Image (cartoon, rainbow, N blue to C red):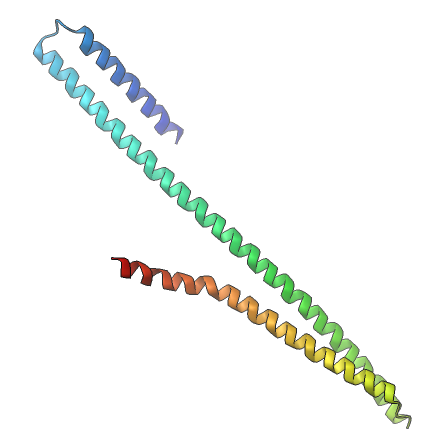
Length: 166
């Protein structure tokens, strides 16, 4: 990019010198003036081409910056969904551990011939919590999948919108 800026500066300086030469060359013959005008036209064309290249490079750069920002936003959203899923899975593991412990306690009480109602209630509550945690983990997983698929579906729909504009 700095090379283009340098070339553009040099072309502008050359054009200024040519313009000064034309104005001070009042006594220059017609062939000399024609050569100077041709050189000026060439430099003007080169300047226009370089300006166009700079504009194209800037558009590409802006497009890349926009894509990077969109990718970062998508990555942040995915990270948030994964964090939520991880929390729900930890909750599910904890609930399942409680359920296993309650069932072990209930089984031991039944083997001993002591049917204790609070152990049955505790086991039922642990089972309900495990079911709730499993449901929450399923919802978090589904949300994560939907979040991952949504950008893909948007990309599939984008060409359809462009086709209708044409």
